[in-house]
Length: 230
Image (cartoon, rainbow, N blue to C red; front, side, top):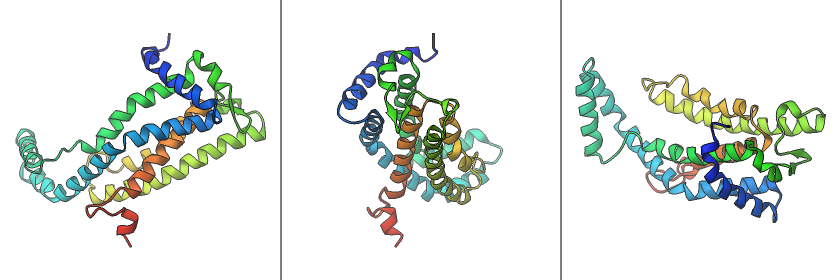
């Protein structure tokens, strides 16, 4: 019995939606469409998180001053930080909200792509490679090329996220994990090598959406970041 079996009640509806979509479009495309639909529904949370990030960036000098003033007095520091964020009507955890909300969906999709009852969906293929295949099953150059293309695309998205995370780490070098955080952007490539092709396709879709969302969410003036920088 899988440790993820508790997710099966939610896996059923996801399986039904994907199966219905796979009657209209290829199953691989159905995975992309369902993932994009969920991310679109979560977009308001991403906008709220972006606003929270801007507030935290604006408050960073004041937070640094509070850290200096209350060094060695963690309880007083926590009270001071709580008061600061209360005055600004902000939360230091706003940026984590979209990720936390996505976690249940990600877990359901992982269970869907790995449980035995999904064979009817996973027997579909992407460029001739079954969606339930792993990298270890790539015994031909054509199959290997599909996996390598997927991993290269994930690495490209990871590079975009890495550059953004590195800039953020340079802006706040004292933040916990600032030196390591940028390199976590490539973790999806390693994870994709361990899961079926269908799960890798889901990872590519959701990480690409995240990278695009962070690049184009409006800045404080209501303009997309790409336009504001011009």
